[in-house]
Length: 288
Image 1 (spheres, rainbow, N blue to C red):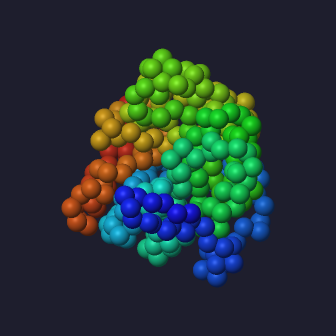
Image 2: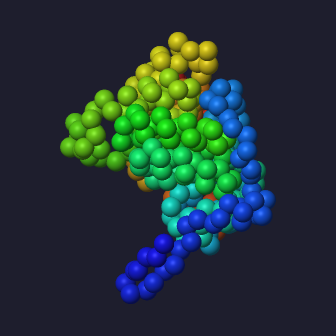
């Protein structure tokens, strides 16, 4: 695919052949998984942690991972288009895995909205790239949500489902396009399909509390009752980790990016990461 930016032609190879992926020694996907394979295996083997959002240029990625990967309480790394549109996802995954074995979560910045058939192709490509989990925000309906979810699971990928975003003007009641009950519908279908990992807006504690109870009520009628929340929206977006921790339950992970990677130097990034980790792990008066 060719992009022309201000007269400068930038050729970006968005897809390598499957043979090239195998030659790089990335993960095979011959094993076909089902939803049940994932229910008892958490993406992150910690009840609470910080997932580092790597929304920076590729040249800065190794320093970020080097500064944070050995901190107990850093649960994994979230990568998206800011990194992958330049270097490609396989190189990004490789760069992280050279330093740490912690899980890599692919966030396609509202992935999971194209036609169902595209989801099947994307799932195979992501698995070959070596990511461990994928975030989807399936706003385009239950058919797409179901097919994209099943396709990812069959390729060995964990699925994290989001329904509401952090910014103003998102839901209809706030002047947005999305129906007010649409996130409930998205979370409900996900939970009924066996998904137990959900993205909620961390800068809206009352909303987090609502979705936690709503999801838990659905899961309570199943064999596997425990759910896990992932929450962005902290610090630069106004959210407070400690406040959200009071309503997020025992299993949740804060997604934090610029507050860590915008620090100057490895020591400063490490200190910032340790500060957020301390906030999420400190005891809080839980709100039921």
